[in-house]
Image (cartoon, rainbow over the protein chains, first blue to last red):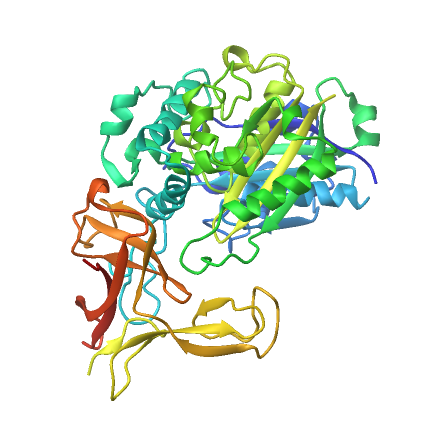
Length: 379
Length: 135
């Protein structure tokens, strides 16, 4: 099976674009990625498109209506917040299978505002606020409080994650916000669901990101100079856990995916130079330091206290600003974090560049649950 | 007559309300609601209805300060491990919504009561369950 390379990758600056459409945002990202690869839409042999909000509305085909109806196969993917990573992985799979040499993957989303989560009326009466909460801030707060019960993790430690990611975003012109948020400001922001304050919740934004994946043969033909090698591509669902039914599990699917990704890449956590992980809430990021093996169980609080996960630290996490400040356009996130890692591996990340970055990891979680992990290597 | 808020809340004609689990006779996994195959050990036909205990311990929680429009806040969204097996989620009541007042593993009991006055489109009332600390 051929190795697979990212030849072109880009994202639009995340923001609020109420006057634009989903296909329009996706088309812009696709053209940026094509330009980055020095290719055109008629070079693409297949197209995997990730979008959640219009999953039944042929977003991929509508993007091609804007940038070129070449008649290639289009697959529209939806997998909660792992949607973009799933589209990317389907593109990777198709090259691995030997079907194609050049494939386009796009992730795109236009978001509403306010709380996400199951209002969950179903039949009968609404259950929100009656049988606990199905809102995302509460669900991830409960997952964080499980860490607190096990290891004594504090509100302040969770808040420090938000301070770090907001700081990182001040160096990322494509992030939604470039604003420092000191610790007292994070902790005193409106409490949404303890221990997650408003500044510890990801930002609802519109966004799009795209990647051009190619076979080794094609990469050699077109030039390897800026190509990034995909060392591992893994997707898992949530294995059975005893509290599954009331506590969506983001841990076991991540641990399973991380183990499989390290095995596929023939690498360990010590080999990773930077990580973009799924900080949909500050409480979530804390869990994934351990889930991804960046530290031992119970050491996540120490990781944030000692600055190991900051730019310049032992293993920088979410130097893009993460979902907390770059923003979280659900279907785009999984490709946007691949863009971020590739940008560092290419040495093109400017002020926030992780020095000598050679290998990076991306991670997303779609609650329900799906986990997508990619390990990428500089060529 | 009031209806149960979820299928796993049972309102027997003679007797007290209770929560019902389905337990796998092969691997002891416990589920809320019926299913054909055990999702833990994949056995078929191994699930049996069991009455869940009305007492348990607080496993995790969040204090919900902002919810959807029309939902009263703050309230405590609690995850409780029941004595004898099964985990359920619901509102923890009669405790101040203050992290200092909420202790992991605090013993709680399930009480059954009207579903905060909520009615469905046909005007039916509902019985729900709540967690209350055992003092």
